[in-house]
Image (tube, rainbow, N blue to C red; front, side):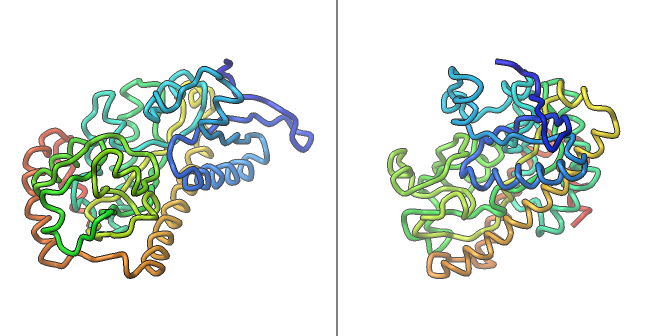
Amino acid sequence: MTAEPISYINNNTMATTIKWYLAHQPIHLVRRTAEAFRNLLVMETDGAYDVEILSPADYKHKYDATWDWSAQGFDVSPLLSSNAVQMSQTDLYELANPGDANFYLFDMPFLFDDHDHARRVIDGPIGESLNRRLNKLDVGYQGLAYTYSGGYRALGSTKSITALSDVKDSSMRVNGNPVTRDFWQELGVKGNYAPQKDVWTADHCESIGVSSVDTTYIRFEQAPHWFKTDHSLYLTDILVSTEFWDSLHAGTQNIWRDCAKRAAEQERAWAMQDAEQYEANNPDKIVTATAEEIAEMREKSKAVYDKWESAFSPGLIKAIRDLA
């Protein structure tokens, strides 16, 4: 298996084609982000670069018959660090695994007041500094721009949730971020914690013994019930292989970074539109937490902040709050 980008003739010019690996489900959600980036890159480089967008099955069939994406747990780091693929996306909290707890931060409950607040954080110096920190960890890949994966999280459930009291003492699937675990434990939830890049169904919930999932509408579209809390944003990061990145001269890197940011902005706009459309189409499925219930959740979240603030860079949470 070669790690080198493929070159081919396109419109009578030599184009360098890089591989973008789609690690998440649903595939159409992440494919459109990759396609937005590809279209921008082709345009901004006059066709000097192109992007081959690969599902896990595509990659296995075309490049590595031994690749077992399910056994990897959707982990893209081996492919990026070896430059077997040049780009991908992953959940932000998973970037903490190399040793920087700061990447747990963006799943903190009620961290952002709204989408505009989130944009000022992730598109500004704070977001850029965190991606620079990732580069300093020397893990073989680095971040370019932050995306959503459906927007705000809510609780999709196979059982009716009409109040916060219905959530307490329930069994719920949440992501593998310890921040998320601590938040739901403060609320009395028996959590089932693991990476969750898959698409949820009622049968899937039943198979692992949970009734609800802390996720976004687009990831559990068939959920018969939703409890809307908007307690955190599902954030992901567009990643690039460091080996490939270092092969680009500074001017090309600037083009690459700009295209990634513009594609990320488009993806976040799509995610917000998806959420609005889902709510418009499914009003009978969704119960919105009351102001009193949100206040209770916020109060419970204080213990999470007390526990975790010292694990993050000094002053980081305050700097985020100051941008509200």
